[in-house]
Amino acid sequence: NRRLDRWVGGGDIRVHESSAGSKDGAGASNDSKCIPHRRTRRNKRKLQDTDEGHGSITDPTLAKLEKDHEEATKVKNVDVVYIGGYEIDTWYYSPYPEECTKKKRLFICEFCLKYMRKRSTLLRHAGKCHLRHPPGNEIYRDKNISLFEVDGARNKVFCQCLCLFSKLFLDHKTLYYDVAPFLFYILCEADENGFHAVGYFSKEKSSTENNNLACILTFPPFQRKGYGKFLIEFSYELSRLEGKIGSPEKPLSDLGRLSYRSYWTRVLLRVLSEHRRPLSVKELSQMTFIKEEDIIYTLESLKMLRYWKGQKIISATPKLIEMHQQQLRCRPGRLRVDPDKLQYVPLAERN
Image (cartoon, rainbow, N blue to C red; front, side, top):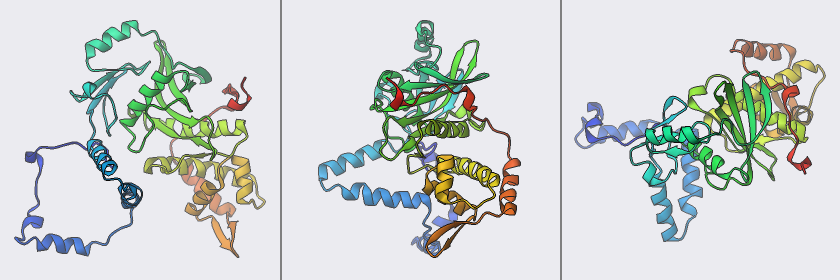
């Protein structure tokens, strides 16, 4: 996790006396030997990067370029962004043009997401920018919450600016410029001044693996309001209308996995509580449009899946279901998608 990593001066580095106390460094080496090598998610990613990254590049020139690129993007190049009245500390590197990042700060229009180096430039731009909502079709509105569908092929610059901005807060995002194959679903809060973006998710127009989500982000000032789970639920509502069983693009980040597991848990417990008869994993998938492998992962985490003679058997007693549902009721209320307020035509059915 490289979140908020930054370069520091030598004066900011402090060395513990305990680790520097031994002249020959034996103390430090002995301590490290006593600590077992844990196979954590971070270590797994490091191993995968080694196995699948530089190790697979045989061309020395390409290997050097790859290493130089990794070194250049290791630490964030923008420290703070100003957007919509918010001053936001960034988390990760984003490939904005080098001439725009020399002062380590950016000013971004909250409506068109164009980036500028100076506040004065942003103020002049604000007087000329007539966009007051994302440049797409509004497909959902419930009170002050709206969601717009934006085609990456038709609104290339807007979607590229969105991807550059979101990369400041996503470590493993790789899509920046080739936005044409994707649809972007922008969640907005509306007031008298316009529709203010608070988060989004993207999905491929045509996914061979039936992924219903490629990338998801709730902008930092609007996190912990339930918008992330709302976007996840919305992606599955689109899958239902398309008649396709969907799943997010893997691998998920740590935060993404927590959000998805929470959504999957809530949906599966509701279905299991409504159907007293035994259900198979396949039946659950057809009812919820959640992929079977995601259902298996969730039920295993809830201790509701047993294996008998090579078959997966759902073991969900009413008492166990009620116990897990009670834990969910203790959590704060969340936004729900109202299907009646969704105006959506699947891409395959459009002219």
